[in-house]
Image 1 (tube, helix red, strand yellow):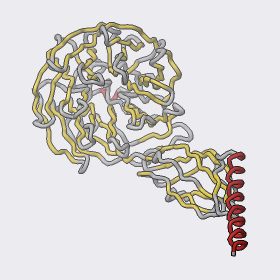
Image 2 (tube, helix red, strand yellow; image 1 turned 180 degrees about the horizontal axis):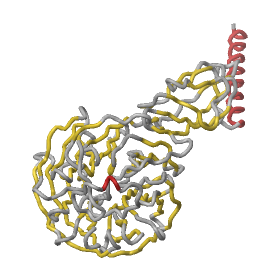
Image 3 (cartoon, helix red, strand yellow; image 1 turned 180 degrees about the vertical axis):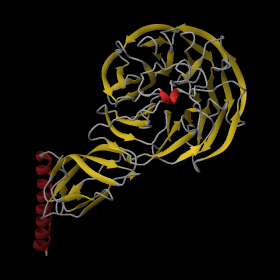
Length: 476
């Protein structure tokens, strides 16, 4: 399905936008949409890249956001050009139904309640936020906004009591009480606010200001801006995701100037920035359920960058996209979906998964076998460290087998590669020494003094038994 493009000011349509190849655009008006310019992004050396486009599901015209239900059974896709929402069954990867919205609403960003019963949709054409009952698939409330507000993205607080909505048209964030479905506050922020995200504790809301190269931080206790984080000249922040990573509370901010900023939300300091291929123009950012990976759709790069949170590096690049804007993941982390605005489709991607289960201990001289839990992985490789002597990794099945020859503890990293993505995980395998005389296996983690105590106990028990037998014979 072919769609018309959106202009850099959000006007629809713009048939000539595809001809503007290579121009850096200030994204506005339509949730990270500027034009459907076709820019082929270069790939970094060492990054896994899929060679074939993933399978797709045809949806409405100009799909923008992809919102996963909490149980992973349904994917909701907002279709800006069709004034509708496609309801996709993830069991069959087919459109199960279509929710028709009021004409001219132009649905864009959306979010879903924690129990999956309500969908909140930004409708800049109305302008309003539409509240949809996912059971009846009917609009149950329309929360009106000021004319020209152009609401873009909606984020709920962890307790679901408030919704924060970025308004690109009037440089504000609207605060909604979800109990009464009414506006209870308006917070002035930077120029052309794009996306919003709430911290895990609900204390702050971060807003990307596409027109003022900054991120505003709203304090939810009084709905005032408590900090403004400058990103530097030339920055054009777009999507944002906030979560608690191994490094602590962190915000990842997409930047149309082909990078992702990493911000420590405790200090509001910039930790680093992750470069993307030239011409990428990242859109909304999504984190995996285990908080180990982020997915970044690159609109004009026609790719999705997969970033490892532990190293803040791009580990995979999904190709074959057509102006992707949003990414969603099933709760088990095994399947991803991204919207192809330029094709009117949603792509379905099998994601490589390595299980977090610990590796069971081994014993010297005893045959060992353990298969690493995984999904959608076609090859395995040890990319750092080494297995204990005597053990080897089957690169096809992920089975660790063999007979350990020496006691000790080995640390190693395994990279699993699938059709579209890679996944890396670190493991530790302990090998205990087996005592030939007793058959007792001793873990290398047991101190030598404890090992000596075990031996002494065995000797004392055997000595006592001999004495008992001698006393019995003497009495006889």
